[in-house]
Image 1 (cartoon, rainbow, N blue to C red):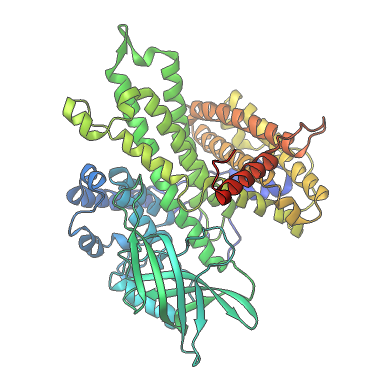
Image 2: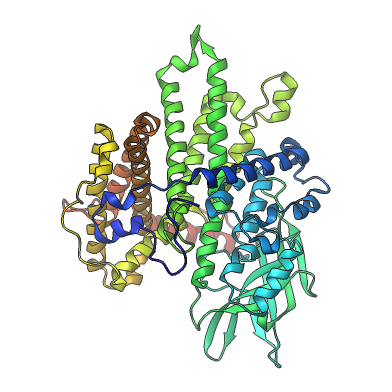
Length: 583
């Protein structure tokens, strides 16, 4: 087990949210930084190694990417392997992995073959196995348990042709006259495992006399009226089973449906927590895999190249590229460890929400700079490299994969907006008290930091206080919460600032823990590099925020985005209606 175990009913694990709520960064919040026990880590290593051997024996990632197809028999073998039950209990044949070890398993699988890793992530993170612990005892839990024991493949039908961010699904669930079942009508797109799923939770809206209710309907895909209308292919993650679905009067027993309260479009809390962790499996774990591969490939390229008789690694620009990549891998690992270790299923929701964007944006920066390092080889395909005898590094493939991760689960800027809204809503609801006094007392763990990192910590403390004050100022200026939320760019910037500050603190806390343990060199210098570059991003975000929402020194005039976009759209519409070419 990990060093601190948080069971249901115990106090929540300490969270960076505590600092954002108070404006006071207490360094003891992050101490001790979570780490696995040697026993738990060794057990996870054994499972991860077994999974890698299983995949290497059955998948050629180059062939999967070229054909866009998984080999015949792979799905059968996966059902029989037990790897579709990463976190489930032994009573259903599960491997009983912790959330962190499941993350490591998905990361290793995605490192070998992206669609294979994401298939494990869909099953463990958003499918029926993820939702089972949130189901109350009864017919539905029994039904799902039986199907999973039988090896059912699952996913989640959420996104619709109209988009993912509408509050209510367009798919409808109508109760039959006898009350025995619900009838589903609608369409879903971008459904992971859609073409191969046996059991599929589907989000739908029930319209009743007491208002709308969100329904999570557990659909047996062999039911009449369930149809896969199209197999969806992406530029990255080629081979991943994904589909467009139609539900044409699909009947689902009433006891196999979870309903929300009237006019509440939110998932039940335990389901929402499970899906939040699942999003990290599906996006952040593959992003970490890509980042580590790019680090490896960067080292190989630098070692084999020289310019004008001078080794590539001797050049300042190359050293900076490699240093930034090393630091960002260290940072994302720190973020994931804090988010998943030593915490319960419903804990650290802010960190888990922020971790997705932190991981996929870091991965995008890393793969982008690795492509620049490789030059023409960076966007050359594997078949082309093989034809001319160059090392067949599949960097071009990982470039495609990495861009897809930024929109998987939800687009990155929308997740920033969600984080900003949730943080501001706490001020409106009264969950946030008066600001704390000062910047937080020193803690013995700070002794593990280098002088440069103590400076970075001091800056983080000041910015946490500044963030809290800015939120309070905005709430005073906009008494109507919905009116503030219309200032979307302001809300997005707040979400990004909060996430960047969390990452800085996670990195410093991990480095401090290593320093106290007598090994400051392992993480201290990487923390210095990461916090320096993150500081530049934060300075730009703060500048944008004050330009957008005002500062003590006055406001810069905002560009007329609304005016020019509305004018352009109106002219385009006019041209289309009248057959002209447009302005």
